[in-house]
Image (cartoon, rainbow, N blue to C red; front, side):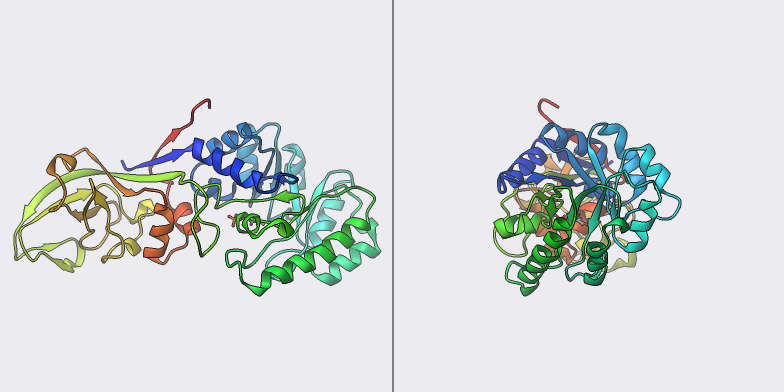
Length: 362
Ligand SMILES: *Cc1c(COP(=O)(O)O)cnc(C)c1O
């Protein structure tokens, strides 16, 4: 089986690095989608040991699954409650993110004393209360009688530092978020920044950061060097090797034909593992001991064939591990090469691999 190596020490260092960029703010962690594919059951406790106390997931089910691993953490659910789900939120001590007036009503029906987050839309038009709905809450605080744990919004274009949406959303959030906060009796923290927002600077930090991708080693910005450490690397195992001579075709569709004597190795990883066909056709070139080992032919469901003619034979015997994605910016380079985002790459990987975790003092 292919191995996904996950460095929880690097995850913790990335957390501390991002948190350190805004010393006055709390630093939460986005651990939705099984912590972007690396395993929320391991990433969550590792982040807790690094000092993180606030965790965001997307679904109620994700939060319920995470709770036993983080018994004392504040766990927020980004999608918020549907009708009939409130009891589960209370049973597992979860904090819903309320994204609309109907969700606010659902939560109010729990009795008015359980904390919730209010999400204000500032231009993304995905989730969150619009300006009119915020005005309605400001005029009628009793519409939301429960304690508000946090007021948040989300950046649409944080990864592009020069994008005009950033300043616009920052300004809207300052006005709307602060007006809503000031209309209520409690002192309520504000939160706008995902990983990219952390890097955009102090204006974007407010009281709580919510990084995700940066924790897992992806570059939060589309330009410039990645200030964060890689967390994952992917290795496949050699199933068998063979030498072929022309005329010979390789793999499904016989789309690749060798042009000379060629040493092939078949690896135990394919698109069902998240190693999509987008890696094929010359877009991604693995290296073995510093020698290029191009992917040849179509990537299959469970296997990939590489040309190891240039690689040292002692590194490609059956059973040996071959690095497929690794190095300082492996995820970022793979994203660039395949046209997928680092988010897609990470969340696709990891379901079928043997995950191996490294953590000192875990
Ligand atoms: C996913 C998500 C984050 C984290 O975003 P990154 O770009 O991965 O840092 C923060 N806030 C919300 C609302 C999210 O959905």
